Amino acid sequence: MASSPPTPSPSYLTHLPLPPFGEKPLDDDESRVPIHVVTNASQLPVEFLEPSPQSQLVIGFDCEGVDLCRNGTLCIMQLAFPDAVYLVDAIQGGDVLIKACKPALESTYITKVIHDCKRDSEALYFQFGIKLNNVVDTQIAYSLIEEQEGRKRLPDDYISFVSLLADPRYCGISYLEKEEVRVLLRQDPKFWTYRPLSELMVRAAADDVRFLLYIYHRMMEKLNERSLWYLAVRGALYCRCFCVNSNDYADWPSLPPVPDKLKADGNGPEEEILSVLDVPPGKMGCVIGKKGATILSIKESCNAEILIGGSKGPPDKVFIMGPVKQVKKAEAMLRGRILDMY
Image (cartoon, rainbow, N blue to C red; front, side, top):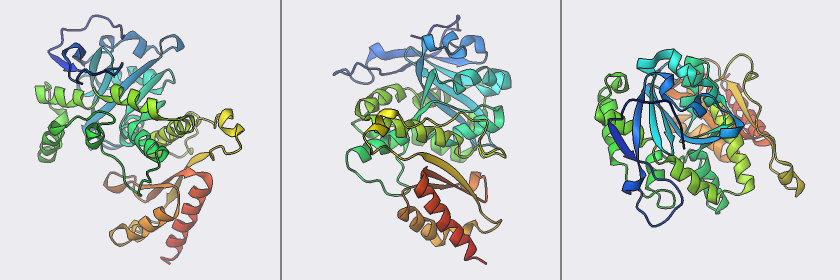
């Protein structure tokens, strides 16, 4: 359980379901925990602020903000511990508070469970110099379990967090409030900047993390050793994906190596990499093709994940992740498409 210095009495409680799994409903009263709004690092658990091998943690993690990416504004970081949810207020606490979390967010001793970490990682890196590390990305884990069980995923078929929560294998919870917040965000993109935090804001932020530990344990039961390695390496690649810089990620932690046990059977997985391909200015539309047809055909031809920055950027770059041979194949096809423009 997380231990921490005294914090102000919480104004809110939420349900945070945890294993062991039984017949109790996910919102059983015994699972009620406080929600703490944090404006000073002293309000956070000591074992989070000072990671160590003696007190390794698994926490739910998410970020909220305005246009969350390198150029947006990170407003709240949510941390779900087994005994409390902490809403780290980047607006009130500022750089000092977020940078106090840097050791934990970069630590291998703290596992951060998150759904689709790419933009969160990008915001942390460019706004605060934090290299998010040691994540379990539930979007990746879901795809790996589907593959393990013989179901093939189509290109760009990524499960949303709402759909993951609704899946009875992992949670079986309807998240109707999420749509309410989405409507408010469309009406006012600065929704997460307003202070004091309203009850809706507190509950919406907590809802995005309070089921993550439950889902994590459900998924860990299903993943085999090979899939666990893919989960670790792809999570690391997701973290650095949009954090492209001039030193080719040299300042990031090294990727997890293929375990010897997986190599021993002679059918070990191939090393996975991230490649960033520059597209000439103004030519991204030609690479994507009409209604995305060109880039979709390349995705269907390669066992690699191909991403573009889209409206949030970075512009004029294509990100390719996967086994080395498949990444090289995708690169060659994309370069060929670029050459065809001239």
